[in-house]
Image (tube, rainbow, N blue to C red; front, side):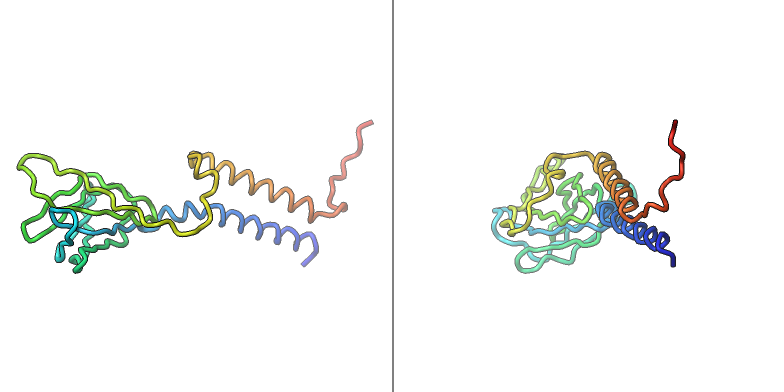
Length: 187
């Protein structure tokens, strides 16, 4: 392979790598979410074993069910696509609508704590209380862009600029003077 062709293929491979790295957020968008937590008794402290928690997608009515809760009242629903769901709790006393609008983000595990309390007929059930956040693990802080809430389209514009700029720099560094334009100077 000739030297310019080798440089161009190397530059193309690097640009492809940059595109792949910067699009990882888009690839995560298709990744499944999960919902986990605990089901507690009316007092909010005692676990409720044997309860099934179900996410129901309102439009298609597709259901994602957990296994019955264990002795600690723990449940997990894996592989639910990101979106809006109704949350139903099935206990020996019957099935209860815990929330009509639970939002799952792509690739995120959303923890919940549900306390089963008797309610009045014809009254909507209260929304589930979020479980206490686990102690943060020592990790690197999120990027500044995520902290400031930059819109997704702006992130794509920035990523595109980085890729194009990288390609220009790679081309400029890898090209030799014989490939320079052969225009005659203006007189």
